[in-house]
Length: 266
Image (cartoon, rainbow, N blue to C red; front, side):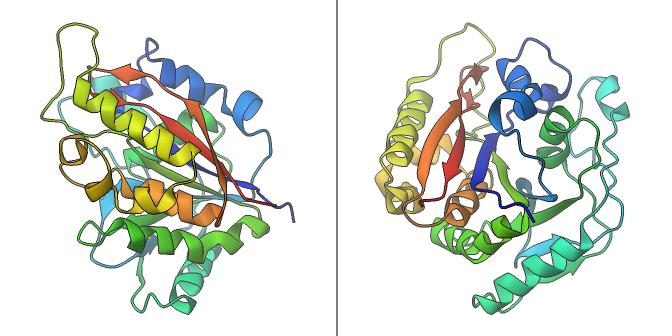
């Protein structure tokens, strides 16, 4: 069984990533297998900012449907498919690892497919849709440390050939989008730069407590749903993991596509 040494956080930005060839992030993801992660994983675990539950929940399905959880977008986006197989064995293993690490309540959802935080990036990264995929939810009433600890509990999955991907957004304030001009809002770049420095310097505890440590934290993330997938990926990499910025670009002046690779310490 091939070991996976990396975990990833991907900023998936707008749902238009699925069709908009002008977005640099789209081309970054399309080059994934050639330039970012050449190993073929046995299965993929996605922690998406678009699935919020009270307790950690996994989707336990044989076949994934896609969820069109976006509204008033071009009609062609609602015809896109990503028929990846489910990963019910992985889902059970995730539940086991979380339970053994003190997460007393872990639920199973036997109907849910993949939300666009999962299927849109995966459609670009693994277009063949032939690798089993499982999703794990976030708990927005909890904090960064809770999600970091979830990641720590899931670290053994890497030795089982599982690719762990947190899919969210480095900045996510949909009420502050800028539809005129190309400049990046100062609060967005301040937060994005702080995050880059904190991750590359290994200041993971600061990232766990970003609300107190980061500039413009509440402006960059009025709600934490799109940030917590980062904490899971970070925790799953293990202590003293190295972080690397693998992509950065912007959309509408406030949406950062900054994405990170975490490599376990030897």
